Length: 217
Image (cartoon, rainbow, N blue to C red):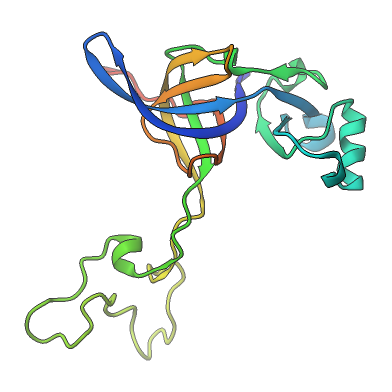
């Protein structure tokens, strides 16, 4: 059985705090309170998970299907619904509140968010290409990708070729961030390092699923 804890919130920004004699860069997350609006089990749905609701929503903005869903759970309508897969989903109850104190200082967590969208970008900015030569033999093609495949064989461009296109605005998961501080009263989590997304972006904080190996293991 794998107990995966999680909570939904938003990114407030980055700062630094001092731990003993060193400065630690942290991202401040405002999380919860979240409400459990659905519990899935393996017998009915094929997997175990809980659905967490977060964020305020005006009653007039609630659609009829969503209203029925929240009424069935006996909770108020919220803006965001996020599903968290966990083997101990049966221990949750409809209407149960999940707050910031679900985590403690020293825990390792994964943070899932949507990265900043940067529009259509070329290969140098999007993939880190070095570009073509800047001296002899290149005529106004310095930021182009170069060759993207053969001609007659296979007469097509292979899928996955790194080319210009949409940069950012994708789901990103950062693994194994340490929880430095927890402020349950204000619903704040301070995690070490950077978190994907802009200020105010929605994030899911869950227990780390790929714990790093200990030295000497």
